Amino acid sequence: MTDQNPSNPSTPATQPAAGLDTVTVACVHIDAAANQLEAAAHGDVFSTLLSLAGQLALIGGGIDPTIRAAPDPNDHLGPLAHVDRALVLLDSAPVSEGPADLLVWTLYLSDLRAALLAAGADQP
Image (cartoon, rainbow, N blue to C red; front, side, top):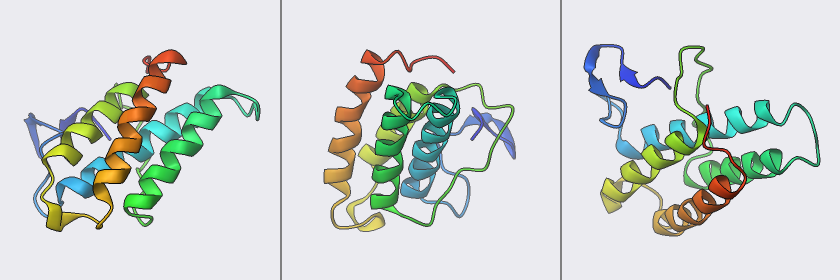
């Protein structure tokens, strides 16, 4: 997920592209953050970052298990920035757009943000 919408470079990624709802874009941000944390763990199964990546994957899967972020070498956002954008999107999503328990997953994501800060995951 890049910082800009490729079809309109002046449009930030937090504004959904045509045909994508805000929950879908939020899930892409959550998955991108999980992928970055998993890569940063370098295969260390005891890494705090890997644990956080797993929790992010759980939250993303709870919202919509079919959405995955495509790897983007030009992604300049860090995991925390992806989570922040996902939170903004989920907070602005209409109730009818997501699953019935969307608020619960959003609260879990908000709680996990503090753990990301504590683990120093605010760098790209």
